[in-house]
Length: 153
Image 1: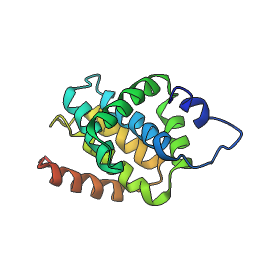
Image 2: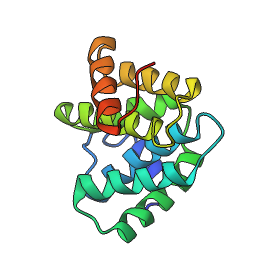
Image 3: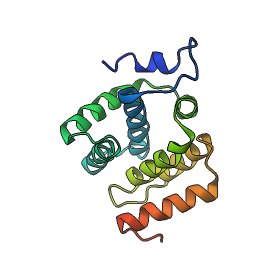
């Protein structure tokens, strides 16, 4: 069902058509997986956090969220470089949802309780590509860390 998502994302027919429903969530999940894999340690905690984020965002059952994450893992492996992938997602998600997407990325970054520089770096890159300022990204990061009970040291 999601196998054709990458070609649809990069289709020149409708380059800025908004992503809808499951496609939108799987594209977001693929970006979450990319961040989780940035430090070369994709942990069970990160998988579970992605599942919870997907379930929370769309009111899915955990089994449905896990299925979307599994599809996203395959899509992420096929997706182009992070810059192109993020730009395509940016063009196809609503401006008001970008802060929520960034918060989800920060949440996955800290899912395993570790501050991995590789993961933090990719989220900072993605924030800029999504059009979110460093200041706003920092405020979102601080809020997520506080919600997760993680110290900012």
